[in-house]
Image (tube, rainbow, N blue to C red; front, side, top):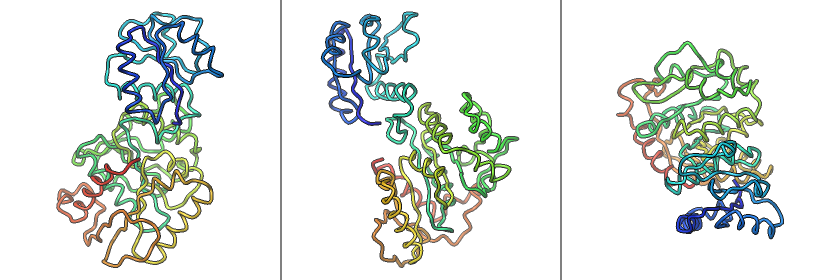
Length: 359
């Protein structure tokens, strides 16, 4: 979300001063910050400002109808009861942590002005990690599913596959009468109860604590979903904070649908194999994304040299870490010996290092 011009109004001068200081010290990258002590101050600010402020955060006792046209989005900063006439506005609880208030403001603004909202930049507890590579056989599914399992040791995790030919229920254990095709029906409809339906259809692997959906009945069900519908789904996941981490396993092709999902990710793990053709493909991907002016997306890429055998080919991309070739089959994640495998330890290092990489 680009910087938004916010005007904060509260008759409590001490609270107003402290909250303004908090925003300037911690969130000046998100807001252009202005304050007013009362509704007259809001009017005076509006009279000297050449356009509406983006956000007016105001306490109920400072609100009057005279100022309702001063801002694109009005939010009520409340410490209790809300007057009936103000219930139409988003309500932000006054006495909570500063970061929680900022999160609530971001969420309310995103819901009110969705076209201006970049879900990968929201100050939220949900992080979306994509696993994508143009290289066939690079180990995307293995890395995505194992990483989801590793992250689930401390976070609530959703593993989500966009691969056309999936075998998720063979990777993770659990059963449900629903599958991804059932869920995609609600995505396609743009259903208002989308997340409630997702929660009803989810399966939880009790051994690994990973949430997932059974594979779709047919790959064509995935192809029916418009890019904007995927964006709306991921936005809802971030806004409502159901999961701490969402790991998305993606196919090797790149189209508008996949670009939309990649753009929503905070980070993208890109597996590379240690051979010349693989490196050439990854270099070409970086080149093509630069050609379509998608530098923001490129900065999210974290290149991982997978199935490492000791020879690292020359490449211009920055290799973040290497993952060794594991001689054991890694497909059945429900097996109890998974945590004793060499690959598991390397995934632990990767998941820890990812926390240190800026989104």
